[in-house]
Image (cartoon, one colour):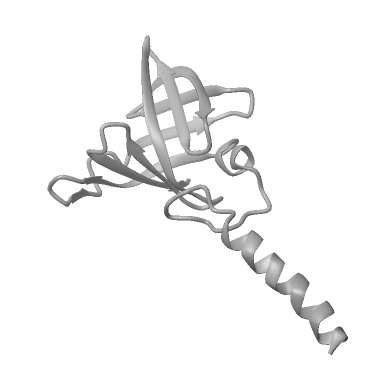
Length: 133
């Protein structure tokens, strides 16, 4: 009986720890990589933009928009051959602040994996879904 408890107790503790690890509403529940490692050094391209008030999903208008983040805090926006440089930083557990052309945009990270980035604007009107190029 003691052997069963010795095996079961650590398993239950791990289950509680792992189930509480998600910082983002849409996951992942657990990741070995830091959020910076999942975000940086890749080109993210739009797959869709959802307007939350209407439910309208746009999958084509912004398909040429790409975002790049470096670990040093540099941000690059590329659209139809035009490149705009700026900076980025995390804000708390789920915030992402992007600054370029004198403007700061704040997003809530809804999901961040190495293959998917889902952001919601701070006014909660638009969700952006991106994947690495």
